[in-house]
Image (cartoon, rainbow, N blue to C red; front, side, top):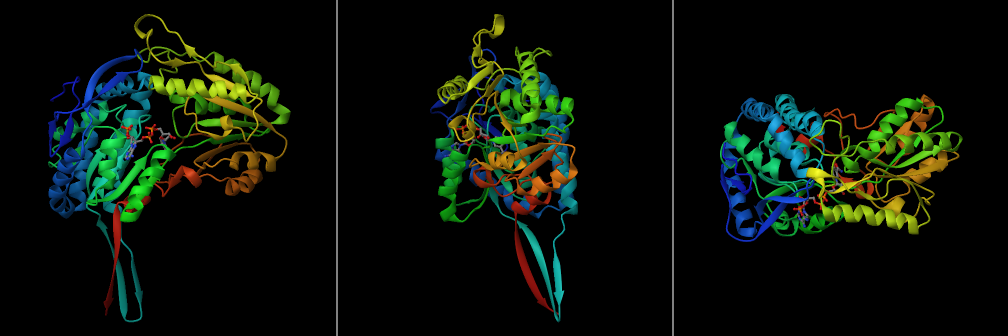
Length: 482
Ligand code: NDP
């Protein structure tokens, strides 16, 4: 191992480098202190990563599927062997509870590699025969691809892209968020431990504006898989579109839960508390708008607020802390500004609404109380814009059609949830909800084989299962006269 956790360098061509030049501070949100630096890598560094990936590509692409799968299994095993350390790193970097990183983030990163390693040998190509001709379609790797991920689920989302890209025979230059680079740095160490050939996976550190844009603009990059905000996705699309690269965009959301009076009340309440506040509300799939049928609205509101107030916010290292810190001070200020906006827009704060002053080790950390709002119009900015924090807006509705109109009435379309025991209603409403994912009586249940992604301003393309392997390959049809 080569860990020096004060300088988190780039991992290029199988080795770590910390180039001279500007650096970016890396903060620990739980305590509000800087603990490391990363390089703000420039185009020259990005170039060296792309050259390494290009050099490694032919041999990697030429391996048999089982051989590449074996490397991915080795990566999964090496990750799993370091799970406690990786979970600590993820918690330190993001402010999320350690138990959450231990039970969700890192196990999912392990699973991402295992899932695509297992899928690869079954990834068959198509053939079509007609009179006198046989068409068969090859699925060939693209070359060097870019994987760019956000700060909320750092290793989980980065590996969700890297695993299928490598499985399909591409080599990768990946950029984690400058806000949460630690587990990506450790992934470089794990690649060495797993014996991954040099240059197959490269990790470049730096800001989106400098490092990220140098990566996406480079014409040697054949595809960009991006998860992050809609604004950044639009900027990447603007740069990439004229170069006609393959582009997958997983972006923001303003997800609606629709709660009917005939739901399983207790299960709905408990699951929606998780859906609203997990990871401090910093999951693209969080339900930030909860629409409740008018006949149960008052009861639901009282119970939801009482339980939101009881959620323990605290030191991410303590097992009783259900919520930890927000990821950064600017993000905390953004969340606070949306509560101020909600009040200006005529809303009431039913609970929370302010940062929390903690004591002891975490007194300088960035904590925000779980916040429930009501009384806001469906069209106001608070109910339209992504806040990405522990803030949820409650709204009553009278009819199915009203609920669907409100749920669909934003520019986003990532996920929606329905809470009802009326199966005919589920069949009626699921198709008309403008969302890439509809969960019925559950939330964030992820079968990795299913297509995942958003519609409208939430996304372009789908990830998961064959969709990921199709994205990271180019079909080539060969028509053979028999
Ligand atoms: P950002 O869009 O700010 O950043 C995402 C990544 O893009 C980061 O690595 C960032 O680097 C990089 N980046 C920024 N600018 C550029 C650029 N011009 N060119 C290339 N790369 C760039 O998102 P956040 O990190 O703030 O993440 C939160 C957002 O992610 C929310 O909107 C959330 O909804 C969305 N998200 C969507 C998911 C989905 O599956 N649909 C899942 C999880 C999150 P840096 O941070 O270093 O600037």
